[in-house]
Amino acid sequence: MMFLYQVVTPAEVEEMFSLPEGSVRRDLRREKFRKSEIRKSGATWLITLREAKRVYSEEYEDRIPVKKDWEWIRNYIDSELNPVIEEEIVQFLDGAPFDRIYDLYQDAIVGASIEDGEEYLSFPEWFYRFRESYEGVE
Image (cartoon, rainbow, N blue to C red; front, side, top):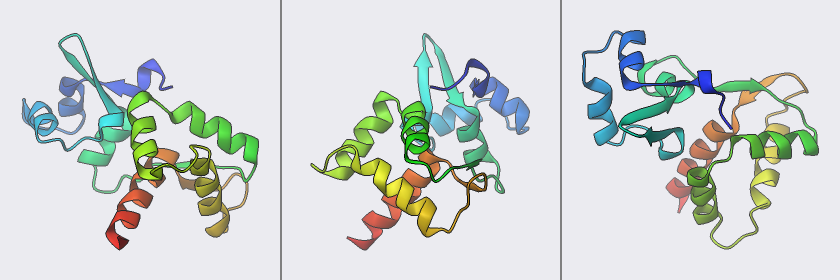
């Protein structure tokens, strides 16, 4: 799960990116944010920092150092899961076993000829891009 300091409020996002007051709440209503990267806590929206960067920074790409190790991949993906992205994965897999998502991410890392410790797309970034490209083919 995300650490406490990896989430920001709409006001913090607006300050970080010099946005007009109310911009982030407007963008929340317009559904510019991935549902798995936001949640409401009481009256306050919480947004992952990486999602704020994805939406408001033109040059941002969420990359992490990866390993071609099956256990590392499983543990890493499990650390990124939350109920929203899990449901999106289940819908995407359309009846295939959930474990298939681990295989697909591992295949992407291997297929990109990434060596241990080199950077590759984070799992959420990869999943959303993969799903989008797959849906574009159908």
